[in-house]
Length: 111
Length: 114
Image 1 (cartoon, each protein chain N blue to C red):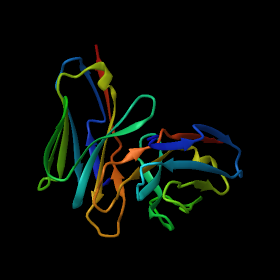
Image 2 (image 1 turned 30 degrees about the vertical axis):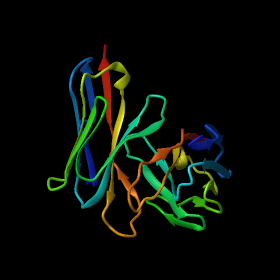
Image 3 (image 1 turned 180 degrees about the vertical axis):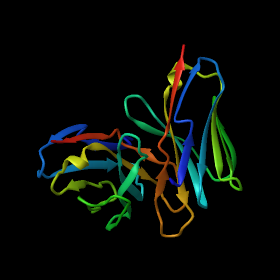
Image 4 (image 1 turned 90 degrees about the vertical axis):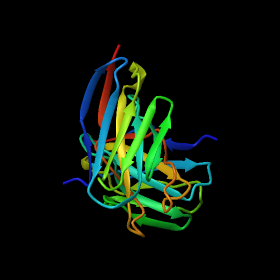
C-alpha cells in the first residue's frame, strides 16, 4: 500500500463547479505539499502546510493531522485549472530527508 | 532569478551510453534533489543533497550518480543507460528540507533509452 493515496485519480467537471481533491497518508508527517503539474509538464508548488488551512486566490488547502487527511479545494473552477494535482508528504523521521508523493489527480475542467 | 534550470529538455540515448543531466539553481538553496516520473507512479526520489559536498541515496538510486561540488549545481549522471531509465527527470530545490520549505522544480528532462 502506498504511503500517500490520492482520490479521485481522474476528475472531470464543468466550469464554475467546486472541486475537491483528497489526499490520505498512513504515517506521521511533519509537512504536506500540494503541487500542480501543467499539461506541458512543469511542476509548481501551491501550498505547504502542517496544520489548519491555507488559501490562495480560488485555492484552499486543509489538513487534519489526527485523521491523516488533506483536501485541496478549487472554487469557481476554470479550464485553466486543468492539470494534475499532486500531494506530497514529509515523513516525521529525523534523517529521512525526503518527500513521498502521491500519484496525482488529473483534473479536467470543461468550458 | 532563473529559478531551477535543467538541460537538456529532451535526450535519446542508446543502451550502454552514459550522459549527465544538468541542474542548477540561483536561489542559494541548501536542498536539491532528483526525481523520476513514470506513468501511473508518483515522483520517486533518486538522489538528494542537503548541501555542498553532501549527497545521499533516495528510493531508486541504482544506475545513477550525483555530486554536489557547489551550492548551485547538482548534476545527475547515468553510468550505462538502460531502457528502464526511460522517464521524465525533474530536479528540485528548496531552502531547507528539514524545516519543510516550498519546493521549486525544474522544467524536466524527457529521456528515452533505446
